[in-house]
Amino acid sequence: MVVYCNEQLESRVVFDFPDCPKPPLRIGMSECLRGTRVRYDGASAEASWPKEQLKDLFDPVGICPEVSIGMSVPRKAIRLMGRADSPRAVEIENTQNDKTVALKGFARSEAGFINQLSGYIFMKNSPSCGVHRVKVFPFDGAAPIRAGQGIFSSELKVQLPNLPMEDSGRLFDEVLRENFVTRCFAYAHWNLLLPNLSPRVLIEFHSRYKYLLMAHNYSAYKRAGFLLSNLRVDFLAKADAYVSLLMETLALPATRRGHSNVMLHLQGYLKQKISQKNRQNLARLIHQYRRGEQPLQAPITLLKHYFNQYPDEYISKQAYLDPHPAFAGLRRSL
Image (tube, rainbow, N blue to C red):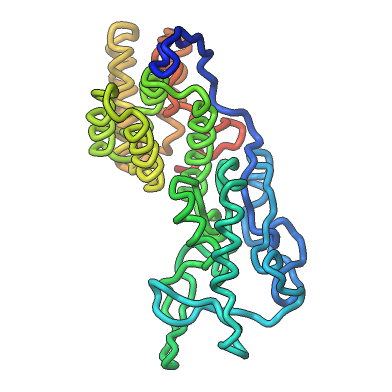
């Protein structure tokens, strides 16, 4: 339980700090990925994301921006044309039929609703929804380049820069899949705090996520500590800056070096509790992981074993050890 002083109300408030949300999390998803036949050719794309690996983690809300702006099923295909940094979404057979403004307008109109979700999985390569390396065709007829982003997804990124977003195809990569799920659960946890956000609540949140942040980028971890060192001035601006730093940092998958650094820090909490031999075995396992000889789950499991034997209230709250539900097994092959 966290007790804090809300300076605006000048009253004492009691707030039960919430645990990380339980699955399934509500996330946005391109409607075709849910199996609905809304693609330009009347097909679906249900096989374009690892549904079985993620099915119990998420409760997807389907959105098809092309159908939502009035395009039919089936319909004339569109593609991105122009410059990679500011493409237009136009019909292939009639480039004068431009859907860019409509798609951006729909993204802005839906941003308020989507802001209540915990993440978004977009259809890969889509001129409306793709997040990474969407083909952009120059108007001069030159060869296309894979450097674009879908019109709808790029505008949502402008409106909701902290929302975890990922392409469907990239989620078949085990590292990127685990990373996306980690971000979604961290973002959902943050959103639970917003109605009761205060300096003390922000500090409590950071204390739970500091080691996860450290694993992804030690420099960002240090910047976060400096940012939160004085919350008496510009608190709301600093809270916004903090969550932006957190989500931006978590978007970069943690390295073996980053994980190893954190696990060695956690081992320090066991220094006076386990034998020298057990400390050496744990350190050896961590270094084996760092060299690529062991999966991440091996030292993590041993750390959890010792902390179950010798509970530590501070460590028990760390998001690093359980950034997402264990049943999904997302760390088994990292």
